[in-house]
Image 1 (cartoon, one colour):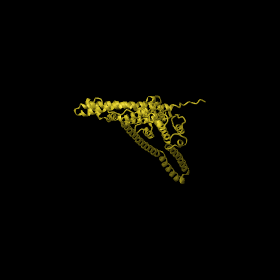
Image 2 (cartoon, helix red, strand yellow):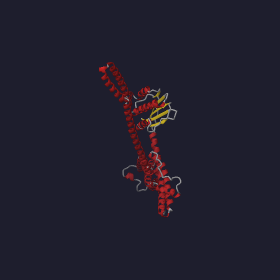
Image 3 (cartoon, one colour):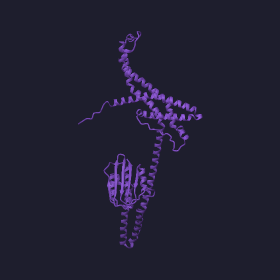
Image 4 (cartoon, helix red, strand yellow):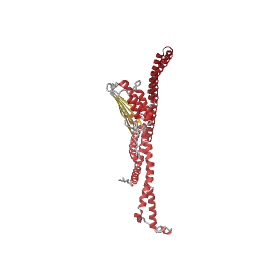
Length: 432
């Protein structure tokens, strides 16, 4: 048996790589911060002081555009430091055909442009702090660890050359070497967290000003979209349940209720016939028994439409197989064995196929139906295709409208392609 070898130096490589990234980020950020400070403060001061005579307006706009360019560069720089991509924020765009004056003044009304300018003015503060810590820790590390190589070059006066010996610390040279090596190892041991913290201080400050508002806006938009989706699913669920209840009420009224009324009338007639014509009474009772059996069959069919026991007991594949066997049109079922899904998903999938087969049997005049149920890592895909006359629609008032509401309530999507004379293909994707 071969054992795979895992490189043990991978974490060390990652640490060294991060130290290099943080170092170049800190060292480059300091001069960029000085350039941004001088350019942004100068442009803003000159532009603001001369804006009353309109000369300062283009200067202000130019300063904002310069700050935008520096902000774009900074967004690219901070991505490796904070470990995530910083998205480009939304800037106001000038519509096509806008006049020159309005085009010129648009950046002045853009909030993100002013945040870029604010970052250009204030960035020197975290940049200076990060640069100072980085420079001190690198100097302490390199100077301390290499002290034995250059300690001989340090001039020593007669007053302090033997101070360590007078204090009882031993040989002066050896003491200095040990002391500076200890300092070097201290700075080396704390180099990574200090550089990491300094780089994150500068990087997160930049991210807050350059992308924070945009990220907050995107989060609000996502929350609103999720709320709208939840509301749409709730409305679809209510609509689907209302449609199902209306259909159940109609089916009971048109089927079992009528049969029960006729059964009551037949039993009443049989009761009157027993005294005068027993043979006719027995025939009436026999007919009433037939009506009772047919009523029970219809009630069982309705109960399968509400909660089919085979779906609960044996799963989706068995329920679909039974459903295909009861269909009046030949069904080619492609449903490989799969693990049990959530009850809501199985129920929705069952009703999709059941409703689709019912519509095919009633309206399509098809000779064959193909049903496919496939499970993927992201969801369950159901396809029902027939070779009938087509013309199916998802519009309100059609038979598939309630099915679409049920699918939407489960968080899925449904598509219907039904050109006239070319059959119907219904595709449903349900999340699992």
